[in-house]
Amino acid sequence: MEKSEYFEEIIAREVEARRRRVKHQLANDLSKSHAAEIEAAQKRVNLRVDTARKNFSRKANRDTAVAVRCEKSAHSILRNSLQAKLLDDVYKELVTFANSPKYEEFLLTKINLLRGEFSVVLLRPEDMRFAEKIREATGLAPKEGESDYIGGFILQSGDGKIRADFTFKLRLENIGATWTDL
Image 1 (cartoon, rainbow, N blue to C red):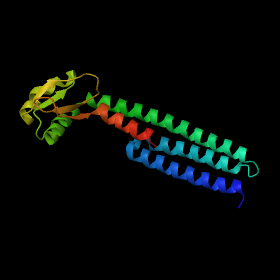
Image 2: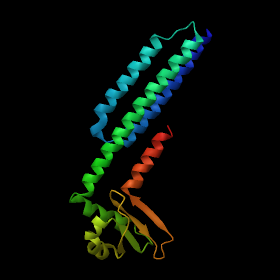
Image 3: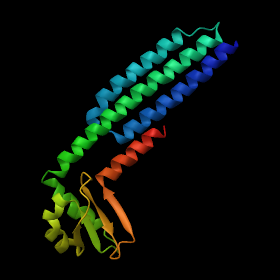
Image 4: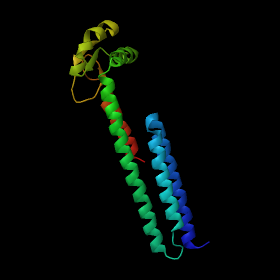
């Protein structure tokens, strides 16, 4: 086996492994409405990978390195573009949900489920309209929290030393952080 064929095989395995990881992560984190778009993007990535493999020069190690960098770069650009678009779409869906009639039921159910030993629930200023219902349903003291998150809530101990963040903003940040680790 020539050196370039060996490198080609290693690169092909690495590309395939990364492709599977990215596909798996996206499948777990994305809504079904994006499945067709993801599949089309994956086909484009596969086409680029196949094209790069066909055009791979077995004679020049330098050409091999360039092809590998181009393949990784194209895959990275496509992945980053898809991730940004999907996060933007998820953000828009969360904003829509936070302004829907179902959001009140969501808040009451989740706060009641997660309240534990907490005594205070911090809400967005827009969600203070649910304060009385939350107080009656959960026994927690609703207080106005920050307004820089999309929706959700923060549970806090009476002295404020212990906090549990259940905001949509944190969930989106966690998804973004997970994707950057790929």
